[in-house]
Length: 121
Image (cartoon, rainbow, N blue to C red):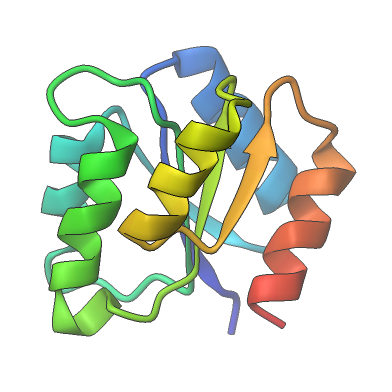
């Protein structure tokens, strides 16, 4: 059975890029356009990995990660941040919220695949 991934980004192009990259590797990808949308998609669904942007409308990535970590069903789900943010301060904020990994955009598809495989063998 393939592994399910939730990809959260407000950019249609970025969602398509993430989806195409991961689906080529056999993953099933669910897309959400911001943190609020993603929270609604977590309800009753099992995801093996979550990939999220930081800068999004309605609910940003940091708050989204904090909300995910409050859910018993996803308390330990690996969360990979995929963002343009590269400042150490932002990375620390993400780590403190519960992020598992951090990838800076633009990214190479093989980089995303390698990180997903590392956190979800």
